[in-house]
Image (tube, rainbow, N blue to C red; front, side, top):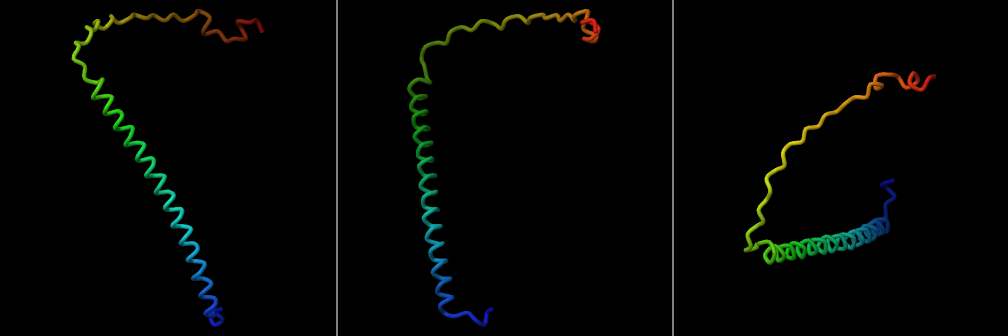
Length: 93
């Protein structure tokens, strides 16, 4: 097989690799552009949150007094007397 390689074969392979490389670079550039756009969106959101926090997060009014925690509730659970009886006995089968 290797004895039959011609310069035309090598040129064909070089041309094919050049096409694949160009296609890969185009995909890579598109992916980078998408990631950059997402990054910019996150940065814009971060700036908006910072501006909102700066404007509304720091209030000079005293906070409302909070009620103390409510007392703990006491819960009792009662088991039905028929709980231990199989269902077929309780329906008469």
